[in-house]
Length: 233
Image 1 (cartoon, rainbow, N blue to C red):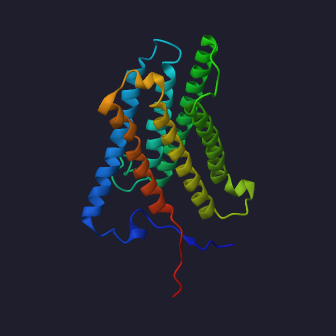
Image 2 (image 1 turned 45 degrees about the horizontal axis):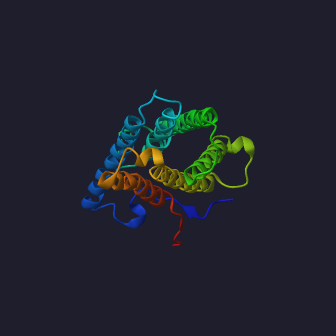
Image 3 (image 1 turned 180 degrees about the vertical axis):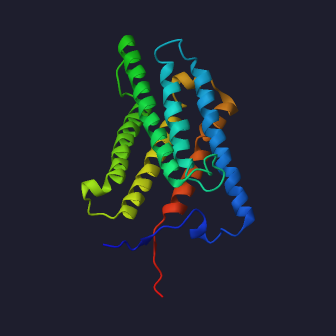
C-alpha cells in the first residue's frame, strides 16, 4: 500500500534551501555540534581520571557512547557540515550502524563498571535520578537498535508498514532516545562527583553544553523526516 507521507531533504521542507545564509549557518552549527560532542567526551574523560577507580571508567564509557558515537551516528546524515558528506547513502548507513553498535558496547561497558563499583562499595543501585534516567536511556537504546534491525530485514519479516513509514518511526524514536540521553548527561552534572570538581560559572557552561548538539540533531531529524501530505495536482 503506497504511503501518503513524503520526505523532504534537510531544509527543503522549510523553503529555505536557496538562502546562502541559512546554508552557512547550518554548516557552522553542524560542525560546532561535532566539536561540542568531541569536546564533552574529552572534558568528562579528563575529569574522571580513568584508571584511578572502577567508577572512573563509567563517565568515560558513557560519554564516548552518547556524547560522541551517538552524536556522530546521527550527524553523518546531515547534508551540511558533515565530514562524511562525500560518502554514498549506503556508506552512511554502514557508518551509522557502526556508530550505534559502538554506543551499545561502550554503554554496556560503562554500566558494568558502575555496577561493579557500587557492589565493591556496598552502595545501593538506582537511588538517584541520574541512575534511573540512565537505565531508561539504556533500555530505549536497545529498543531503538531492535527497531533499526527491522529496517534491514524489512522484506524478510514481511512487515505491514511501508519502508518509508518505518524510517520515519525509526528517526522519531531515535530523536527521543537522543534527547533522553542528553537529559541523562545533564543530570550527571548534578551528582556529587561532578560538582566536587566543577563549580561556579564553569559548571553552568558544562550544564548547557549538551543542549547545543541536541538542538542541531532535533532540527536535522525534523527537517529531514517531518511528514507532509502530497499535494494533489
